[in-house]
Image (cartoon, rainbow, N blue to C red; front, side, top):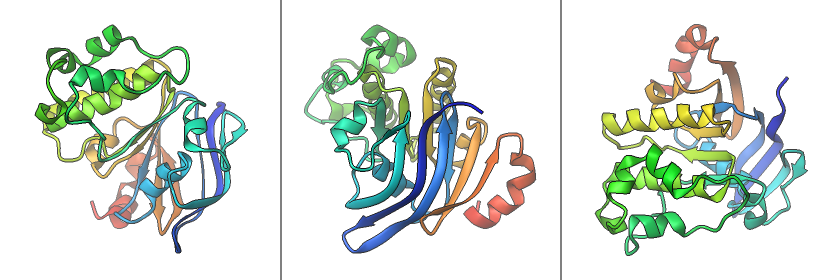
Length: 234
C-alpha cells in the first residue's frame, strides 16, 4: 500500500446551520490522481473547501502526511504542501499574467520556476504582460494552476478545471495532469466532465448526499460504467 498524502475520516462540514458533509472517508496516496464524481450538490466542492479549512465548521479527521489539520487555519494547511484551485479561478483582472503568477508566497521548497511553468504553458509566456481581464477562459485556468505550481505545493486540489473550455484547451489541461503525475505530484480533482477525467485518474470516488458511496480503480472503470450512468446521469 502506498503512503497516503491525505487521509480523511468521518469528515462533517457545515455552512452556518446547513450540514453539507455527513461523514466523508477517503485517502489519496502519494503520486495518485483521484477524481471525485457526483451530481451538483453532492458535496464534492465542499469536501475540497473543508480540506483547506474554507468551510464554516468541520469536525472529524483530515491528516496530511500524518499531520492532523482539522483544527488548523487555512494558511497553516497550505504550508503542508496543499494548493487549491477553485472553480472561480481567482485571477486579478488588473494585474498582468506574470504579476498574477508571482503573487502567491512560496509555501515549500521545490516549486516550479517561472521558466518551467512557461515550458508547460507556452500560452502564458506569450501573454505574460497581458492583463488578467484580457486572458481567455482557458488562459485564466492555466494561470490559476500555474500559480499553485510555483508555490511548492505537492498536492493539488483542482475544482472543475475543464468547465466551459474549448476541447483543444481541455486536451492541454489533460496533458498537464499527466505531466504532473509523471513529476510526482498528487492530484485530487472534482470533475463534471467525465470524458476528461476518465482516462486521467488512478481512482474514482462517487459522492452523494455528502458521503463517498462508491470507490473504484481505473482498471475497474469498464465494469462500473452502467452504475456510474445511474449515479451521475451521464
